[in-house]
Image (cartoon, rainbow, N blue to C red):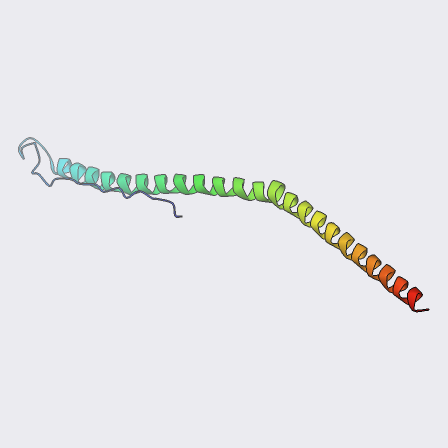
Length: 111
């Protein structure tokens, strides 16, 4: 019954830059590399965020189920259990009383 978690996979083509080396500085290449790193980090962050959100939703569902069990189902079953126990005890008392009456009658007949 697990929680399906996403796997974000970032695919980037390693194409040569779309700009020429003349007229641009080294900082442009550095910016492109840092942007690719930022995209990879963003993909990992998105995967973590979605995973955490799904886990939080499942935790909320579980909390609702636990509350329903604690507040509704368990008290109902405890009431039913007490009712059945009371009925069984009453039946035992009645059976004991009947046996006692039978014993008293048998003793009275023997005398």
